[in-house]
Image 1: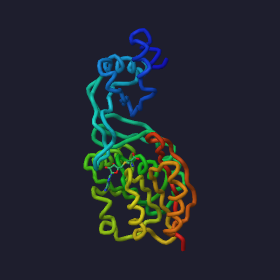
Image 2 (image 1 turned 45 degrees about the horizontal axis):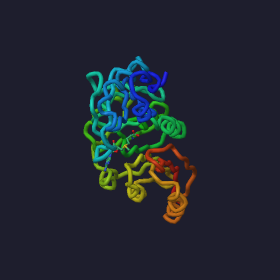
Image 3 (image 1 turned 30 degrees about the vertical axis):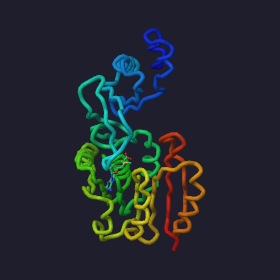
Image 4 (image 1 turned 180 degrees about the vertical axis):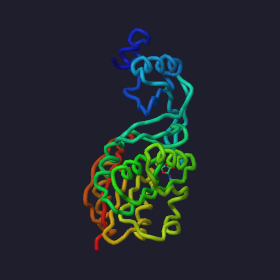
Length: 265
Ligand SMILES: C[S@@+](CC[C@H](N)C(=O)[O-])C[C@H]1O[C@@H](n2cnc3c(N)ncnc32)[C@H](O)[C@@H]1O
């Protein structure tokens, strides 16, 4: 039953029409955007959500956009007590606190796709690793040396915990990707980079830490009309686009895209 039908006899039609269409679920936590016009109904909405999804223990209201270096939003706790959860994805388990580290379940297909195409024996670097949704499935499925980097201390702590929970090993570095050229002396066969919004400049930096014949999986945010220009720019800079796809909407008219790239020899 939808949220709207659960609240049909509790809210007037003008308020029903303001209800958000969807919500995100991470582990047993629901995250919902409730507009200020439904402020007085926020607890009613949270209760309806928990009736709709009996597995939910916490309901959080997202108060603003994802911002700041740690890429986390502010939240208001509407139902439940805790903001830490266990989330399952691609056969892996992730512990995280949704108020302290970035996580989006929308990318599960991409994370599974990358884990499939990594080859045994590769040296792999995951930049902006977060709590490990790219790194963990790669390391579980393939025999690789893998390194994860993130500048959020909390994300690195959960990532180390997630290595334990999934019985794997990896090198985890708490550091700023801006220093990657000093941090890494050796080259990598494959670099996965879910770059933060508007920070495409990191793609120029990875050239010097790639092995010849290496591959980069580059995630970026673009408006539709920007794509032809961006693809031309990549080619001009010497990147060969092996594959690209639209990974879904992130804001009105803005989508996340992935590019699988090689440097032209
Ligand atoms: C878009 S999130 C991606 C997280 C994760 N890979 C995922 O897919 O859910 C960006 C991550 O990059 C980290 N980050 C942002 N700027 C950074 C920087 N300059 N150096 C290292 N990590 C950074 C944030 O802490 C956050 O965990």
